[in-house]
Amino acid sequence: MMAVKQTIGILIHQTDLMLTHAVKDVLEPFDLSTEQQLIMQCLWQQEGITQKDIAKQLIKDQPNITRMLCNLEKKEMIYRITPENNRRVSQVYLTDKGKAVRDEVMHATLNLCERIHADLSESELAQLEQLLLRIQRNIRQL
Image (cartoon, rainbow, N blue to C red; front, side, top):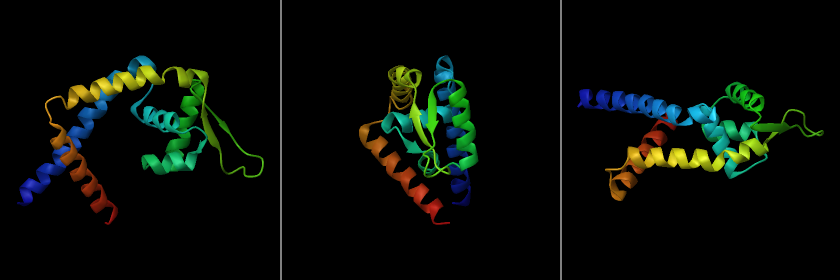
């Protein structure tokens, strides 16, 4: 039983690496890293959210988010606004360039997802989602 549990951990890790590599290849034409794409995804859902909110959604620490946002600013995909009344908080917005790539990036990543789980049934996908959520919940309780 112990060997099975260790194998599952290895399989999850290997799957994560393989998925990250596949997404990286799909995002290369858009000059986006996998983590930058996740930030863009947050902003495509809701502009004006804070760096702290992005960090919380992506389960990343603030310095990493700040670094990625700086890189996205250099690529002219996003800009930040710091309110006068609270200099510790900055809100993040999409530039026209950041908005323009949305449909193409979404199409490319959706196409990849469809290819990845092409031979899985809807019930298998739902079960996988539930199992992964349970694993995440267990990790949070550590």
